Length: 417
Image (cartoon, rainbow, N blue to C red):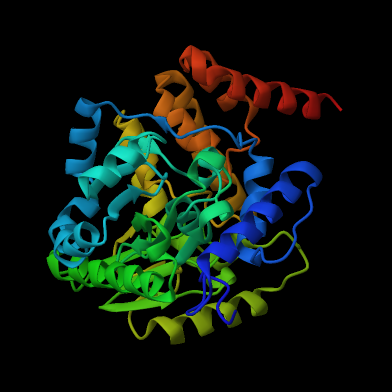
């Protein structure tokens, strides 16, 4: 197989592959061994699913009621491209007896449309609007895994982690905000063996790219003077300025993050202290970094004496802070794409990262909303967060509580070592 993201190469026998995958799945389930023909992307996903304590016999859980779902998806950015999804995928899904699904960044299905008989069958495993199909909750599946690895992926038969999903084939691709690059969710095509073909993965990837292009066209014209900084959940920040999109180096990401919070400016000595752990770093080193950054940004944006940006900066971490301050916890969580520059060790960045995470965590625990707590607990940054897991276990309904309590006991035991 030439493409590890494709489940079944053209010309392969799906019946034989299905049998081989069933045997490999049982080998992994009983002995923890990954055997041929399991692809590396699937093996890595199985391991993540196992670490998240996904039950192989379980099914997805519905988290959003009809009333909650209606309001949530109407306000979701992907609602603006649903007409495009229906135009490109609707007839394909109906004619092939498939389903088209769209989920948010947390793996919650917002829309599931297509052939009626297929919808009824999929409903038996809770492949329905409002259900969470994130990899950390439901195990290996195309929409959840596409979000986890942030690229298009196809999942066939027993490649799914949960046994009730083994009869199905799905292909999904992530959809991003065209300006900030923020992951918005994924678009998926789900059905039977006829989808186990490279064309279905290429198709859903093309649909995702078309949606991103449509979102760019539908967005209001950007302010020519606006500067936007995206630094949550990424080590290399994205800067949009003067109509250009720049991916910054880790050090330049730190500098821009610090300058953005000090519109009045900062001296070189202050910036040196905020930026470097090593006190032996000289002002000459900092000036060299700033000179390279000025060359990258172009004339006029970075000023000196004191160092400051010539235009106001709209940063994603400040957006989360403002929403928390106004009590808009759900909106704050939707804007939180992860820790601020997670690999940075710059002293002030570390303090900002911890403060923002602590404020958002405290707000989620105080709110006590199961969906919001689950969004945090099942995220890469929240999987070991004992206080959040305790809060989640205390508010989940009875049938969903045992798995969360098991995770609480595991984390508690680990922290006592």
